[in-house]
Image (tube, rainbow, N blue to C red; front, side):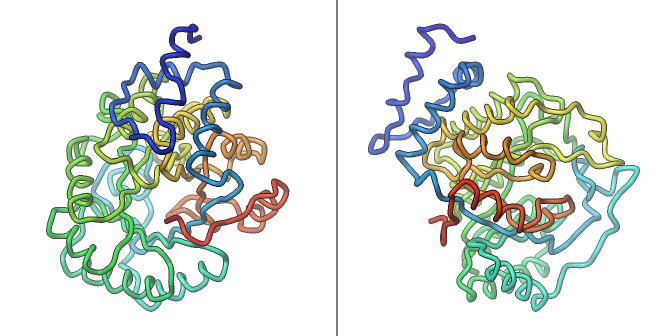
Length: 335
C-alpha cells in the first residue's frame, strides 16, 4: 500500500488540463498508482477524466477482420498464428465492396470509427493498395478510419496517410521485460519502429496492451509507463483483457481479478489523461458491473459489434442496454 509521501508525490495537479502532459512516467510511479486505495485511485482517475472529457460519453468503434488467419508471427495469445497447434484457416483479403458494405452497417449501428485488421507480419505492396482503396471508401461514408496491418516501413506509412488514414493500431502488448515471453518472431523495438514510422507520417496512433497473459503487476506498470512515456501519448489506448482461445499457448492462463483490471484502466487514464482509453477485447466475459467500474476508472471508448477479429464481443443490444441504464451516450466522433 502506498504511504502518504507517495500519495502527495503523484498529485493529479501534475497533469491538469492546460499544463503540459507528463511523458516521463516510471514503472515505480505507475506501480504506486496501481496500489493506491481503490477509492483514491478512482477519484484521481475521475478527476482527470473530467478535465479532458465528458465522463458520460463513450466513443464507439467497430472492428472488422479483412484478412483472417495464416499469420507467421507466434504471438501466444492469437489464434491467427500459423505456428499454433490449432489455428484459424487462412483466408484471402476481403474485397473492397464487401468492406464498404460492413462499414455502412457499422455507421448505421452508431459507430464513429471503422477499424480494419489483417493478419500479416507486414503488408505486401499490392495488398496495401487494396487496403488504401478500403480506407478511401470508408472515409467517404463519413467514418474515421483505423487499420492494423502489422509492421510498416516509412514508405508504407506515408502511403496510408496519403489514402486518408486517421489511426494506425499497433499494440506493444506488455512490458519490454515480459515481451519475450509472449512473442519471439519480432522484437519490442520492431513495435516501436513501426509506431515511429506512423507518427512521422502524421497518422494518429492507437496503441495499448493486454492484461492476463501471466504478467505480474510490475509488468502491467511497465506497459503503462512505456505508453505514457512516449514522446506523444497514443490518441487511443486499447486495454485488452486476454481472451483465452483453445490451441494457443495461453489457453490456460489464470483469470484476472476484475478489480485489478479496473486498476490498470485507471492508471492508463491518470498517466494519459488526454487519450481515449478503450475497453477492448474481453468484454464478453465481463459483468455489467465490471464494465461500469471501468467507465468510472476512465475508459471512454469501446468496440461495438459481435466480434473482435476472431473473438466474441458483447452483442450491440447488451451494450445499448448497459449505456442506457447508466445514462451514458455515444459520441459522434473521437476527435
